[in-house]
Image (cartoon, rainbow, N blue to C red; front, side, top):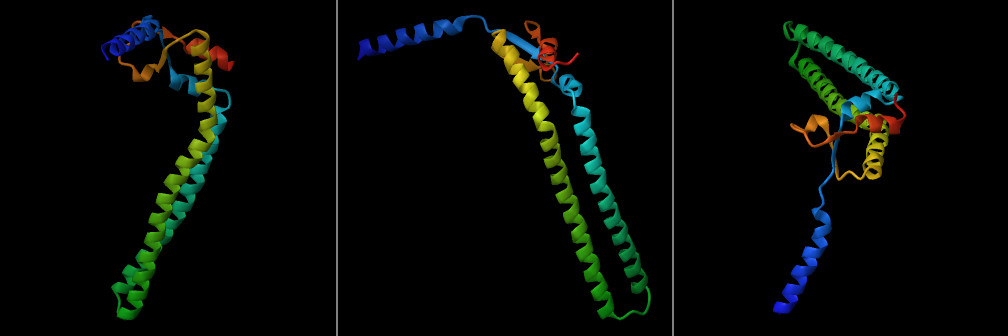
Length: 167
């Protein structure tokens, strides 16, 4: 049993000896590279347009709700029967719920659309970072905005920029 443990310890030491080499660190400015990618401005414009379309519908629904609310308030201050007030109140509550549902759905739709439009750019950037890392044998590449300190790290932003064909 002791021989088996000694053999395993020796095997582990031999296996980890190759990993004892100094790790190579690099960093990139991910945010800057994303902003510089060709076509990203078109994707952001499409996202903005989509967001504005949803906002216009939401604004229209909010105006409809305010009008119904004002109508209800006017009826409540008059001699309107409680049955009519109940119907108008139910209408108002349903409209409010529709508005709330629309807001929730819109937020999720905007996030989904953003992912749909931006993901190809992110994938392309990550592939370029990976290629630069593999070509130059880097162990780790960090986003500069996530690092508080990076003294023994190479700035690979320009290498990735070149890989992407950004000038």
